[in-house]
Structures are given as C-alpha cells and as structure tokens.
Length: 326
Image (cartoon, rainbow, N blue to C red; front, side, top):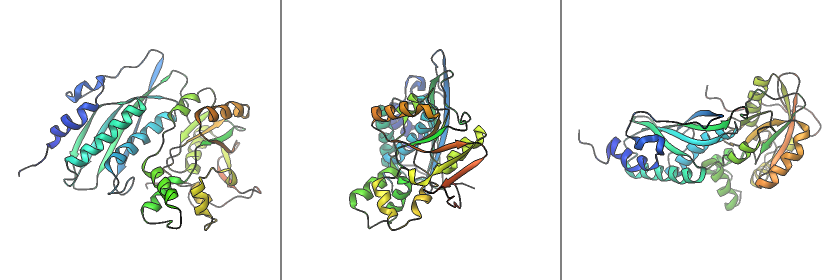
C-alpha cells in the first residue's frame, strides 16, 4: 500500500520537534530528561480528549490542541504548580492529514509561548476510530506548598473563580441552540467551550490561603463532592451565589431551572477552593490584582455530601451532580 504525506516520523520532525524543550532532546530519543529545582516537587497530570466527546469534528485543530493543553494546565493550577513540560500522544484516522496536524501543532506552539511550557516527548498512532489525543503535563511546586483536595475544614468558605456553565452553553450554541441570544453572546459562550482559561496565576497565589482545591471539570457540585470526600466534610452551595455570565443569565430568563443545572455541568476549568473565613480579605485583594472574579458560593460543614440550596435555604433537588463517563 502506498502512503502519502509526511508519515509518522516526518510529522514529528516537521511539526513537533520544533516544540521540544531541552529535556525533549529534539524528540530523537524514546525518553526525556526532566529536572526539578531543589526544594520543589514535580506535579504530574494526564487528560484525554476524544472526538465527539470533548470536541466536535469540525472544531479548528489549533483550538482542539489548545483546549487539550489547557485542561492539563488547569490541573496543575489546581495544585498551585508552575507548568514545565508535557508529553503528547495522538491517535489519528487517515482523513486527518498533514494540514490538520500542522494547524494542531501551531495551536500548541502559541500556548507554549503563552504559558511557558514545552514538549518533551510522546507517541503517535493511526486509528480507525475517532481522533484520540492525550497530554501528560508536568509542573513544579515548592515542597509543602501544594494544595490538595483533602485539607478542607468545617467552617471554611467555598470559593470559585470566573463564571460557571458557559462551556456547557457554548456546546449547545455550537449545536444550534440558543438562537435567541445576541451574536456576541453566542460567540463568547462558544469560545468558553473551545478555549478555556486555566487559572495558573491564581493557583500559584493560593498556597497558604486555600485549605483545599480542585478545578471544575466534571461539574461544580461533583468536583466539590471530591473535596468533601477527600476532606471528610460536607458542603452547602447557595444557588443565588453561583457566578453566571450575562449570557448565561439571559439564557436562564426562559428557563428558571437552568441555573441549578449549570451547577452540575463540566468543562468550566475554573478553580474551586475552600479557605478559612479570615482569608476573605486576601482573596478579595487577589481578585482585584488579577482582574478576576472570585466568588464565595457556600460553606464547608460537618457531615458528608454537597447540598444545593435556594435563597431561603431550601434544598434544590439535583438529579446528578456532574458528568460521569460510566
């Protein structure tokens, strides 16, 4: 069978070797060399993106690359880590040719420059199934400064950065929904789905402020549940305090049940954390310095599980707390 295009190693040499940092050794070896500064720990995370689940077939390849990388950067941010390196694994069908890979690599190059991270290796394969992409990211954090999920305490306040639910609404927009919204609102929501903003600087500023933290990937209530499970606590979230964008509020105008649902949807990649009440001033100053909304949405409590309540404190029923693969 005759093959056309650059082929596996041609693609690596042309598109990915220029992205390699010193530890990647030009992508000519089967392994990389990773250094860690004295007094620091490496933080390692991995995320997978599958076509039709995490991105749409007609999404621009540069944005597919950026979203995949940024999802991993969000995991590093959730531990207060600084990004260092990443490894990339691709499984592509034959219809994703060199032009697609070139645009994909260009997206990675732009985000490498923006976030100070470089490629050090990976793997590639062909597939008869949908596109499957995986990144393993490596960061570093000062020893003892890492923020885990297991440190929350009863009485802590629950905070979240940015706004919640926009990515979910953006996917609906890309599938033809919410035609009643203004064009700029639809575009903003679609961008939130395709291009999340990892809160790296916020994460790096929260050690010794936050007791526990994770990012919102599966849904705010589900991810807060992970903090509760790890910390041995419960939590209450006040639905009226949930930070929603103006576009989300407009969408909710015709659907009063939408805000509660937005507390359960994923792909926000905002930081969700618990901090003591006396940290409120420091968090407010941090929000002002970063130009980023950070909203108190509830409290950690004795017990177990997460409750969503309305303005009067009445429990709001939730069918499922977040996205589940199985």
